[in-house]
Amino acid sequence: MKKILVTGGAGFLGSHLCDRLVAQGHEVIALDSLFTGSEKNLQCLIANPLFKFVKRDVVDAVDCKALGVEGLDEIYNLACPASPVHYQYDPIHTMKTSVLGAINMLELARSTGAKVFQASTSEVYGDPSVHPQPEDYWGNVNTIGIRSCYDEGKRAAETLFFDYQRTYKLRIKMVRIFNTYGPRMAADDGRVVSNFIVQALRGQDLTIYGDGTQTRSFCYADDLVEGFMRLMNADDSVVGPINMGNPGEFTMIELAEKVLRLTGSKSKLIHMPLPQDDPKQRRPDITKAKQYLGWEPTVALEQGLVRTIAYFKETLAG
Ligand code: NAD
Ligand code: UDP
Image (tube, rainbow, N blue to C red; front, side):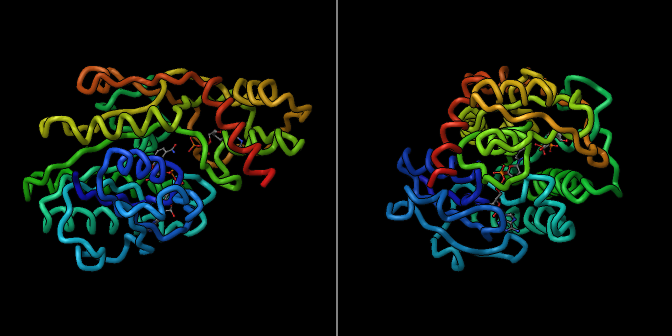
């Protein structure tokens, strides 16, 4: 049994990770400011003696005493709003969350000897000129645009992780996550999968930004969380950054049509302006994840959409 801290533990991905870790018998502390996360996501865990929730901002330094634990074996650093709507709401705080959050978790790892995992992102590749994106592609990111607080914050966090590893010999792990969806995304999250499903179920028009020919690759949450745990439990020599995502690539029009078909909705597609710096294409090269972790996604997009639609039907009804 290990003692494990999950920052962002009340969020979409963090809460699924907490579920899996507690089910394996580990003691889990979820630290979250509840900016985009919700205690509802932790409903099944709250009464479990192996689980504890601490409401806190990762921007503030933290030690074991503040967490009420004697030590830590592992830290998963997931705290950061991931939807463009939410990370652009307070861009300065988003940057602080990535940069100061990384420093605070790295310092905590230094003082406890814990292994520390960073949830990085495909956004480090920006609007990529190499397709699909392998880990050795350095990216094409605007430093001064409206997405930069997130992209550059995550890039700085990557740098900090590797500088701490070189300086203090910390055991680090790093995953670059490509668009992931599933149950427990918030209905008002603003990302495309939840937007389309919620709009379709409410009989509202589906909002296609731009002409809808831009592409994304969508991974189901359970597949991703399995990948996180494989990386954390792999040999210390397997550090990353490792891409994780589903290599299936779809245009936003194709996604909208699938959602309409699977929900049976009569909603129409409407076009809205394309947000500034919106990447035109994105697909992970997952050769490394396969090679080092034997990991690849198992849930196809339509299968995952069916499960996510079922979740939103229930959530919106309640
Ligand atoms: P989410 O918004 O549902 O979860 C983020 C969680 O972090 C929320 O619970 C939020 O309240 C918490 N949080 C935000 N700022 C915080 C702060 N300053 N201090 C403490 N807690 C804070 O998003 P998610 O999709 O679950 O993303 C989780 C992580 O994975 C993020 O780091 C995100 O950048 C990364 N990621 C996700 C995706 C994806 O497609 N889901 C893609 C790339 C990267
Ligand atoms: N998008 C869209 N309609 C929406 C929300 C998003 O067409 O209601 C588009 C968005 O412009 C982008 C893609 O869907 O091209 C994925 O957007 P999301 O916010 O989910 O993730 P990210 O842009 O960070 O990949």
